[in-house]
Amino acid sequence: MEKNVKRWTDPNGGMGEVDCCIIGGGLVGLATAYRFLEKFPHDSVLLLEKDSRVACQQSTHNSGVLHAGLYYKPGSEKAKLCVEGIREMVAFCQHHHIRHEQCGKLVVAGTVNELPRLETLWSRGNLNGLQGMKRLSVEEMREREPHVAGIQGILVPEEGIVDYRAVADTLAREIVRLNGEIRLQTKVEKLISEGTKWRLVTTQGEFVAKKVVNCGGLHSDLVLKSSGVQRPARIVPFRGEYYDLKPEAQHLVKHLIYPVPDPDFPFLGVHFTRMIQGGVEAGPNAVLALRREGYRMFDFDLREFWDAISYPGLWRFLIQYPSMVTYELYRSFSKEVFCRSLQRLVPAIQQEHLEEGSAGVRAQAMFPNGKLVEDFLFVHQGSLTHVVNAPSPAATSSLAIGRRIVEEIGA
Ligand SMILES: Cc1cc2nc3c(=O)[nH]c(=O)nc-3n(C[C@H](O)[C@H](O)[C@H](O)COP(=O)(O)OP(=O)(O)OC[C@H]3O[C@@H](n4cnc5c(N)ncnc54)[C@H](O)[C@@H]3O)c2cc1C
Image (cartoon, rainbow, N blue to C red; front, side, top):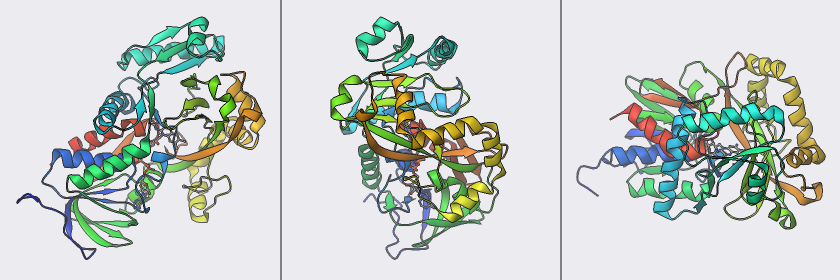
């Protein structure tokens, strides 16, 4: 080890002092630790993860898509960090030989009513600096996706698919190579301010850190609350369920096929995604989950459920969007309804082509007035930084988010 490298040396499991401590080993936490070590190679970095492996939550329960930044309001954090993020992620994958493919995505307007929204996407994509986008007629769409239905489309050639499990594992290896340390099965339970430093009370002892970054994903608001301040927004978990296309139907989708999203709804709508490891996924829908890590329909946690239903913001949201919430729930129970949504994009899809696939839970922050937090949201509390809202496209953007946080928290 280099002479002046201040390495984390606390074999007995507690009370050492570290320069930077990251809470949460999803893609955002891993990328932040990695970017910190790249910028400050002589500082000590400790990443604490409650699970027995890194990236077992949102970061590996997602669509595996590299988003290019088409949807996001120009100038927003999402727009900036997604456009930078996809380029950084592709470079990282190329450098580390991680499987990925920029196969392009087709966004399809199914009806005349959707054309103004397609137009908005086109101008947002251009303003955000996406490269090589094309407007496609029905014939041009069919040349690319012979089974697609719709009246007009946009091709986004930069978009692609990637193996996010491999990205996370590679980031973890890089952190260790750069002399950072990752402690698994270490849940942070409380954060206590000690002047400019923070004491972290965990299930594996206590640590003191000069800087702390909370990248707790589905639990980020609870980690924030444990530092003694009020939550500016609360995480409301939305489960997204997928179907897999059976092998005999996989030829119906060549790349990525997405609908034009409903602007009143924070998610992109059910879509088709060719997966990097093979096969095609269809989904996800968006239903309120009864537990933050509730990957199955009836997974339930009384404390978390109470935390959600005692939140006025949730009730205000339910009052604002009753039909959307009911429809998503109905679609979750009915394969027929799910299939009908998919047929709007690819009419040849039949129920018998679909088999139950995986599910993911989105950490979506909600303000007390019931509005969903649209943009990425970072909150600084002295030397403690919270990543309060990092839903999609945060996997794509993770390396850019990490770089941004490190720039903000400085040396
Ligand atoms: C269904 C679905 C589809 C998606 N599709 C895409 C996509 O195609 N492309 C894209 O870019 N994004 C997508 N996303 C979004 C993307 O996956 C997430 O935004 C991203 O993974 C967030 O990463 P994270 O590190 O913030 O959270 P996570 O991956 O959830 O990681 C948070 C980590 O913190 C740990 N943790 C929590 N509390 C504590 C504690 N107290 N102590 C220690 N550790 C703790 C957790 O165990 C977890 O490992 C999708 C998300 C979902 C759910």
